Length: 212
Ligand SMILES: O=C(O)CCC(=O)C(=O)O
Image (cartoon, rainbow, N blue to C red; front, side, top):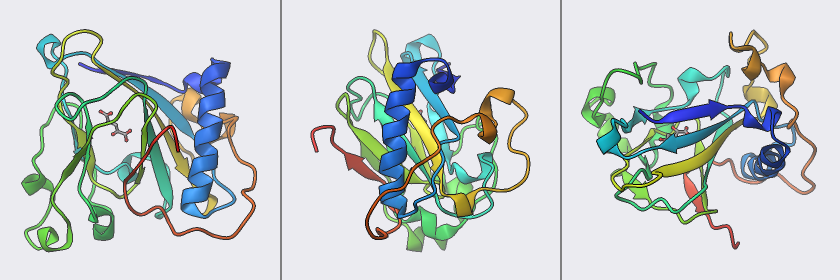
């Protein structure tokens, strides 16, 4: 089973620095001056031979305390993540389908056929797998269907740092999570303003090279 450690930015300055830079990226992509990072996760995915499950298809939207679209998740590769080993995969244009509901992500496996209606396939593109080099990142909309394949290689497996960043208008005013460490109020990476005009909403998954 892969493991993820939550909200390491609250404990480690180096993680907080990285996550604060991701908030800058989220502000630019969302075109929203008021963006918060309300959690981060560090994924460690040992090989499938050690019992690691793939990350099944899902949207982030139903598992986060948001009441409308306008949240991004940014996933940074902490080491090379080749297509055949732990890479994220996305269903293009799936954010146009709206919320698809909650799934049991822990004990069930899902194919896209289990999640999408037949007419949904007319709207979305074929799933794409996105290999990353260490330091690359992807950003996906909270409504984008995504997952990650199993880790096939031996050694440490795949590692990634993922942060979820909603714009203020996408944040519910209500209570957020029961785990104290994920309360929005405790987030130190909430945000300053990006100068400049509104950019197009980040409604597609995309790759950001660390050298760009
Ligand atoms: O890295 C993974 O296996 C899944 C990541 C994910 O679902 C996310 O960051 O939203």
